[in-house]
Length: 362
Image (spheres, rainbow, N blue to C red):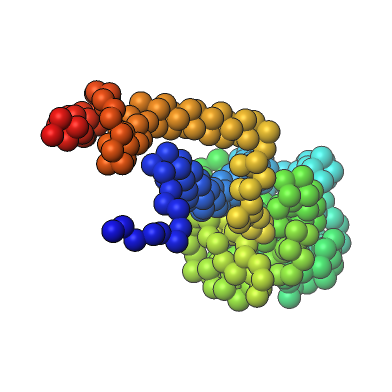
């Protein structure tokens, strides 16, 4: 005697539809999480690449501006002669007026005395101990000006900070190629600061000008008002090049683009670098708005409809014959005189149909 069941077993059709729906939902959830993590990685790579490219564009423009002044001083030095100092003074004045980046220009003789300048107040000063003069006698020089000297006090800078001037110097030679003096361009840091501030606002970057030791000479920070974090300072001081994701504070990270030296070649003595920074803006687990957008929703509905239609056809062709055979087997077991239909939708249905026919004949 069969035991009476306390619950109703599901049909094959219901079980099949339930399995398909569950599997589809589980697959969609898995794909959503996997896609979100992948998008996080892609978005992070895009942001890192973007900050580096923007910073590199800015660095190249600043490098070209310094190259123009460098080419200018070398070209002018090649046309000067120490025996024609009086004729050179108007040229020095004109050069300093043409370029807003130049604070003043001057000529020092071989003994280290300024014999001509666009600023008369510095003429006659002894500059023999200055780095620009000593290195200029050897050919050329580019570097930060010393702050603790008389020239800086006579012509103060237009900005506050660790560095107020950039010195460019080139040797003046006689017709036989012997060095007989040094030409100097003293550049204001103000125009570099202004360029970095304006470019940072346009490109939406926090910018830091650092020297070869990683010390910050100038900074412009708006997106993340604080300066470099301790970890960021360590990365900058390491001298590496590339883009790095570093913690900024307890809640936020930042992308740092450590760019190559601003100038190289003959100006390599100016070992300054630019560092660009942006806050990370990763939209973690924000794929829901994408998945449930109108276009994607239509795609999901279309795929779901196709899946349900395919499942219904599968049930109609493969499961319905089994359901019919099960009903016929039950009727035969109850003593009804029926002849079972032959089913050939699947191998199992054909075997079951043949077995029921044999049972009916016995």
